[in-house]
Length: 383
Image (cartoon, rainbow, N blue to C red; front, side, top):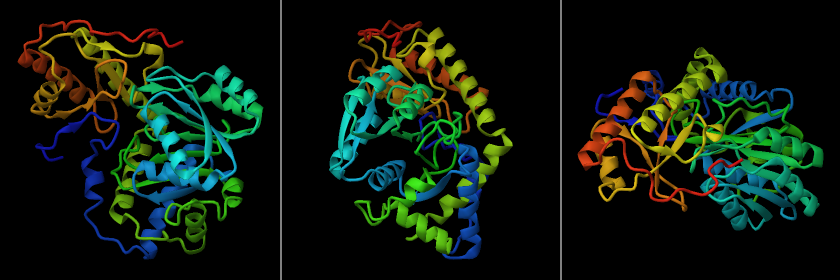
């Protein structure tokens, strides 16, 4: 990596390996057999990671992860169907906005900025709305860093006989998911998250029978997953110009993911990153939004200290000057900032960012340990 490039402590795009970057140094013909073989291998590998080789298909979609989410919702949800959306942050809210735009009816369980939707709440909502056909949930809500209880939600959906669609954008590849065992009708993610590729496409892993029954249902030509799947099945090609360099980089990233030990290996490193990061910043006086039970190994939200000397813009720039990019907060209930744990980050980088935070505090004139936050969200136990 170029030494001038900062490390990205964000939920994606993230810091990639030199070999992933190098994979983009070649040009590929979008209809060429060699490129088609790369696409097919990527899809096979993703189905293997998801545990869906016998029951599901993998359909890649050009664009960001949100493109893939909209493609999945627009293709799989019939215009007359009703959906239950579980919200506890910006990305659950975005799912609601997509459904609004598509004209698809939905009801929501909105837990605010950070509390998890629980299985019994989903069961109550499904009982009260027997016409609901599917539940949509974000696996890891990165606006707070919470890891939602997918297992208990999936069990409620199974018992009620409704489909489950998971936006696993920032979790898939590091958090174990078996779409056949959960069960899960569709899982959506993208190239530039826990597999440590670069931005350019997302993908949906969908029950084969459900996708086959979705012909002609999508609101969009370019986002029609069924049409994309059918065209790829017949020709091996993407319908429209694919992000060739991004696909090549992602295949290299998937090989490195497997070499690290797959999901288990990636989860172990990210968990170590989180634990080291949280311990270091807590020692500086910073408080996490969430108690340990709900901390994901993807990104952690820290509450801003109560001090007139603390200004996030200056804080951010002071850390950036030392070679690290962090994320602003997305909470409505309290001032905060976020620090990611994913990407090519190891002990050395985590220790260095802790030191960078301490140096930034001193540059701003904050005493260490920093002051407690001005406002503490109620019921932080979130149980």
